[in-house]
Amino acid sequence: MTPEENEYPVDRRLDQPVDRAVGHPAGHDAGQAAGHAAGQAAGHTADHPVDHPVGKAVARSADQPVERTPDRSPGHSEQRPPTLLRVLLERLNWAKFAVFDVQFSLAARRAAKEYGNSRVGNVSVSRITFKRWLAGTQSPQGDAATVLAYMLGVEVDLLLQRVPSREVVPARLPHGSSLATARSMDALWSSSSLSPSEAAAGAGGLWYLDGMRIFDGTAVPAQMYEATSQDDVVSIAVEENPHLRAFVQPARRALLIASLGGSGGEGLYVLDSARARYQLDADPRGTLPIPKPYRLDDLTFGILWAMLNLEDSLLADDHILDSERRELESHLAMPRSAVARSAMPELSRVGAAWLGSYFCTLHIERHLGEVTEPPFFWTREQTGEEGAAWLFFRHKHEHLTRAAARRADPSVRPGHALCIPEQSVKDSEPYERILLFLSVALMEMHGLSVWICAEEEYSQIDEFVLAPDDRVIVANWLRSDGIWRVGITDQRSQVRTYTQAIDHARERSVIEGPTSEYRLRALADYLSIDWPWLLRRCQELGAYGSSGMLRPRSRLLSMDQLDEVLRFVGEFDPK
Image (cartoon, rainbow, N blue to C red; front, side):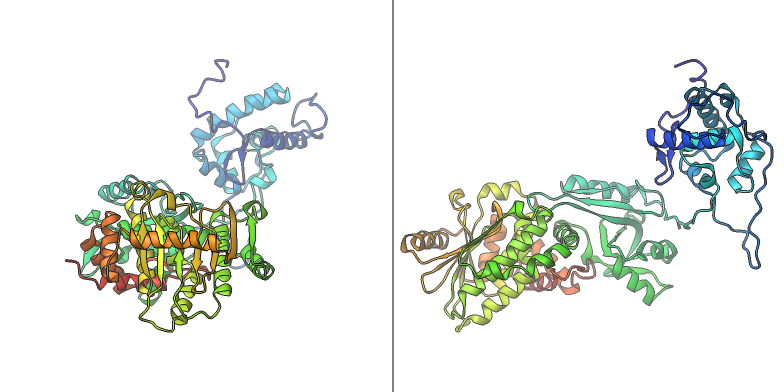
């Protein structure tokens, strides 16, 4: 680098051509575009080398005014959209003349070296000319046009075009204690990454929610606001309404996060933007209330984490899943069927899990037929991520309802066995264990008696149903090599093996007890969940309903059963 090139202390990342589509250094391609623009300004094409002074065909100097006639028409507003030139320079923080002058001089020297023309390196621009360029009232000409096109990677004619502008309503910066609380969530929950203050004011931040074994991971726009505590709600002040309206107006999913940090309180509270939009329309001049049961903790975070991950992946796969679902009949007609994951590579992990679960449900119900005696079930859920299917998949809810209606004697409870090894519990975070607890509580609520064994060797047993007529219906989708693997057998040796597994879980259950409440209390203890706290939070959230905190958008998901099981658990005795 020569002393002349190091004359100014500038950021080398910005000292490059700029891609007008995104407003950052464009690299080689932008330089080629600028070279083409330079060739046009010099009166020849970019296919031939420059062997005469650039700008010879244009006699005007850089500062010679070439006025552009403004569009004037009846009713014309003085508030015209900015030029692309102004927008690009503002993005790069080059809109002040002193900064622009430095960058323009550096670009001129590089353009002269690249085009082999020393005259281009001596081009300069006066302050008044720079202002006219920004206003769009004067067009760059000659060597100045060559340097400007090289500098920004955009042809001069485009730089002077007007571009639509969008007014951004700035949000107030959250209180320092509120930001500290938000950042602490990333330490509390390993799958969370929330940075509400990183984005430009008014644009909101993103809340990243990582997946583990099944979830693909997702991100949701999130904006933090200060709030005050009032009885059973926290309220965002009416002064925030202009920004609130701008943030919740788009139809995309977004979350509002209210904090009491600025008023000396504690905690963060979550509200779906769709619910906020409805409330603002109903009371445009009032404060925005958020129920206190929507406070972020292990219960509400687990629900948000699971629902958002499931929903975003299923919405992304919606068209593919609809097409594949129409083709399932041929597979259902066969007693045995298996589909490899590689057969549908375009599906997300969640999409493949949903399709496998859906097909296995159809397979089970087809082969159970109209049996009235209770069958025995064995499924493979060991974590909250795996158990979330029971809480949110609509076809799972319908399956539980049909199974209960099929029983001739409602007092006879079918058995449902699982294997949850102690190591799996230790490896799961509290919010995941709460999701697993709620999925088991849902089964109990629908009349199933759940047995859980802890021996690791039983964790790889197929998912199956032991029918009353001594048939075994195998239906694997969870932790399976393919999307599904199903079959049916009445061979005595195989039926005996599956029967022994059911007997083992029933006799060695870690949550054995005479009632649902007894078994679920034992499960909370096995999963290291605070029983009184869990009952209180389930009662609070169940009373308000979770749909205000998070409204489902996918037709394949439902939160109705979640609210039912929250109320079911909330009625137990906390002592």
